[in-house]
Structures are given as structure tokens and as C-alpha cells.
Length: 333
Image 1 (cartoon, rainbow, N blue to C red):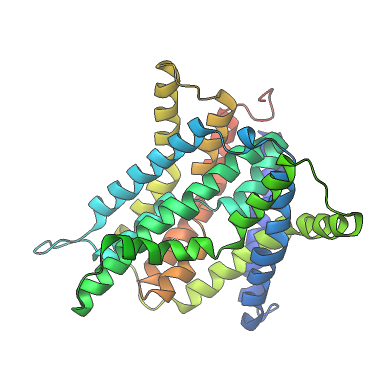
Image 2: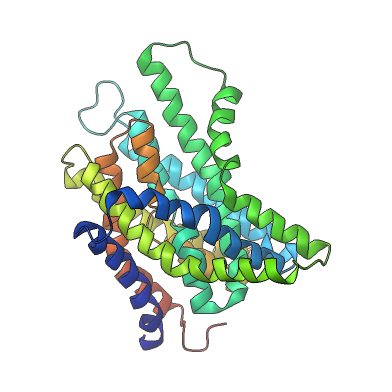
């Protein structure tokens, strides 16, 4: 346990420091978008490029692991929507738009800003491939599906004629295609495939930016959570956010591990190490950028923010306990 805490305490402490810095106005609110842009467009893409360029494509995108994680993500989205969507005549729940955003925070872990550096710190560079695979699934499948559901609700609520399903999906997919993280992974994989290296000065710039990704990304999570909480408009009952946070931290990793173990027992080529990494990715707190998306689409960002903050606070204990149960620091690969 001590070896795990030596990794998890600094990671979650940096998130807390970012939150406190924003709370105490040591970092002005106007600086938070710039900090977030630095991580998203400079530091994290360089880190992912380095990982993508350092391993074969088969290790970067294992079809068995990607398929397993995608199936679990779809199940979590469907279950969360089914449990939280208030249909006509029902007394409890939320509308489809907010059910879709609840499903997004239930199924989308903070694998970019937190997952990649944390799992690599625990397991070494071998963990980067499975984590990157989950990031691509969440950006292109989970996020696209949930945003399409949210947009479909918005059209119905406004009385506009419903757009064709491919049009709605294309609109939602556009956001994933404008995200620089997948393109950084693809660029790194292409360099690895053709066995090319960046020129010396450029490689040094990429290395320096990538090295800054972990602390700045974690600090940024804290500032983004503070900002989202400050701009949350409504008080949200505990019953509307705590169950979704528990789906994220308990059900999601249990489903990944259970389905992966069953697939292995049936002879599917699911590697034990990859399954362990995927389970821990699923146990991460919800992605903090979903609060920004919820605000942009006019959803209840107060509810979304509370889900993210609750999962982030609870994840320190639940993630650490799960890593200890897997034997991390005691001979785990």
C-alpha cells in the first residue's frame, strides 16, 4: 500500500492544490482557460506523441482490449440513461439531455489528464498502450453517442424537426475530430510505423512539453473543478449525483473486470496485464472537461459538476484500494 500511496497522494494532491489556488484567487479565473489550452494543445499532445512513437501499433491498440472497453462503455451509458431519464408521467429523474450528460460522466474517466500519467507512474510505459486505447474509445464512441442523445433532446424540446441520425452523429463526432489528442497519437504511431525520429531540437521541445504535462494537467483539473462549481447554477439533491458517481467508481470497473475475466475464461485473447490497466482506468474519476461541455450545451452543469467532484474526492480511496487489491507495488507486472 505504501508504494501505491507514494504515487496516488502526489497526483490527487496536485488536483487539490489547483482547486485551492483557484479558490484563494492565487490563480485568477481568467487564467484557467489558458492553462487548460496549454495542456490540451501543447503538453498532453507531446506526451501522447512520445508514447505513440515508442511502441508498435499492436501494443497501442489491442483489438481485444479496445472491444472489451467499448462494450462496457456502451453498457454503462445505456444503464445510466435508463436509470436517470424521467420519461413522460414519471415523478423522478432528469430529461434526456441531462441523462445523456450523466451517462457521459459515468462512462468517461479522466484518462487524458490523469489516467495516462498515473497508470504509467504505477506500471511503467507498458501501461500507456491500453490507456490510450480507452481514450480513443471515449473520445470517438462514448462522447459522440452521449452528445448525439443530448442534441436529439434539444431538437425535440425546441420543436424543430428531428435531424436524421447520421447528421446528429456527424455533429457530435466533429468535436472528437477537432480534439488534438487523437491526432497526436496517430502522428506518433505513424512515426513508429516508418521508424522515423524527430530532428534533435524539435525532439527536445516535444520532450520538454511532454514532461510538463503531468503536473500542469493535474493542477488544471483542480482549477477547472473550482470554476465549474462556481458557475453551477442550481443546488442538486444528493440522490441526483451520488448514484452516478458510484456507477463511475464501482460499477464501471467491476463491469470491465467481470466481462474481461469472463471473456478470458471463454478463450478470448484478453491479456491479464491489459485487463488490469483497463479496470483501473475505469476506476478513475469522471473527466473534468464534461462540465465545460454541459455548460456549452445548456445542460444542468451543477449536477454534472457535483458528479465529477464527488467521483474525484472518492476516487482517491477507491482507486488506491483497487490498485492495492491488484497487487500493485508487490510484484504486479
